[in-house]
Image (cartoon, rainbow, N blue to C red; front, side, top):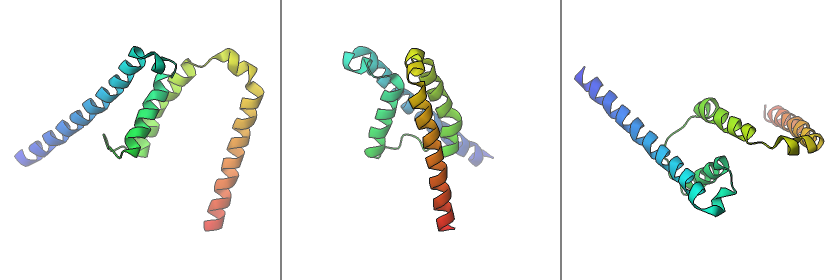
Length: 121
């Protein structure tokens, strides 16, 4: 029982350390976007994506994430923030090209994946 408790406590400590590391990186990006005028023009979400890409190319693993975790917990807030900061007037002006490219992109993706799966199976 004591061994299981010790292992459980070390896992909790590692998770807290990883969470605090990711939180500190996110807060650093938020602080940079407020302090420097160069970063004010770029949205906070895009800055986080850029920092994540840089960390991925440098091969720094802050946290090991599964695709399910990303799709269920990280993607919805990013999409909500992007939709909340969307300029609706610009979207209304560009509704036809945006809709055309969205529909065409989905069709191309579906056909490409179906052809690839059919070819390899």
